[in-house]
Length: 113
Length: 117
Image (cartoon, rainbow over all chains, first blue to last red; front, side):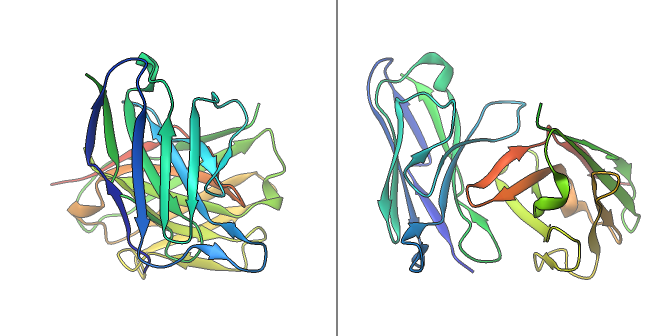
């Protein structure tokens, strides 16, 4: 199984400041045939289902604000929120969909400082 | 509107059974692989099972293999999860998702399953 490890577990950032969440996979999730990383980021607010933010490690889902960006390749990935807004308070998960079983990181709780 | 709506959750005793349903609308259900993911109270997301677009291939997490069965009825645009021999550790919100090359791009709102005596 591919183990996904996020850091930090929790993060407090001031409004308007940058937030950075890291995700490391125990094996590469880069699919060589199309050169795409099968890595997604989700946002989950309390009492709601997760929402897809980024797929292929760096492609923003339609409708997601451009302050959210994903980067990285192979085994190391980052989700960056360039200017934190109050509505961004949530738990963020990375997920690999490269191989079965599909696995998620443990989650990073983002709060306002 | 593209939508997934789960139902069938509830309270069940250990060893009991429950069948979850997920009604799809707003997209061509029969073209997509579908998945179930669960989330225990206060915990993270755990993938449970997937089924291919015509229902001929299924895969399960080791924790539910032999106890859960995923199926679909493309004529009814509905995904199912039959859960047998339930255990306390199966207590969770169960979500159905549409699988794609983006990962899980559509999620249902979830249905709560509580296994307790």
